[in-house]
Length: 271
Image (cartoon, rainbow, N blue to C red; front, side):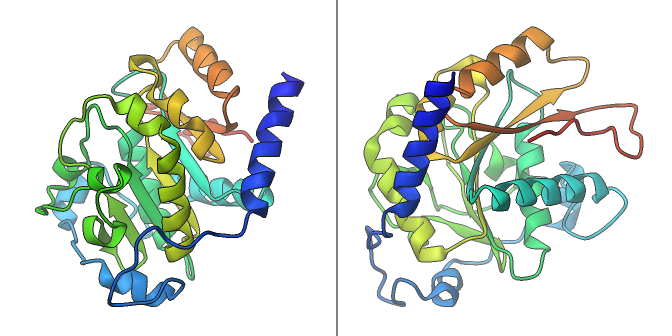
């Protein structure tokens, strides 16, 4: 395990010490490195408040309902900043644990912080759901970006002025092969250099359904695991955590769907 962790640390250090490469694509309306220009190019597409609340997205504004996610956001950002991490994947041991709901709530929560920006990318290529969840009407397709067929600025949207979303229109075959492609790492490096977000979040498929998360693990700094109360078994969680620890850092475990909410027990989180 020490050798594995050492290798992970070495790979992260090499990536951080490498000067940002020029973006793979250049857009005529702005120069790379001009953050305000890059963000302004993305069209603003705002889901209705009713739709957000209907889908349990409660962090658009500060509220009692948003408090638990805001605490999780702060802990997440503190841990990531302490380790100089910027990319976090969000997955779960099995299906229907609410990982996409957690990802969206965290993204909106981060966007409410001053001088913060967040890019949420949908990497659940087998069963994309964000466009349907938010009921967004757009033809933009992040799948074109991760296959190096289009620019991020032409296939992403903004949900808020500082919250960008790359969403996938439909299921994709060979998803693990796509996520393992070394060119995808270059694409993500380009997006990061061009937009300079505070955090890049990736909504991944459940760990048990495929090897997609394992294929993508070396392209992020850490992973957050969402477990569902009274649904996720301890054995499933242990396997998920142990296997993912071989390819990236474990940021923490979130206990979701807990019916017995108290002041500080709705989330089980550790660094």
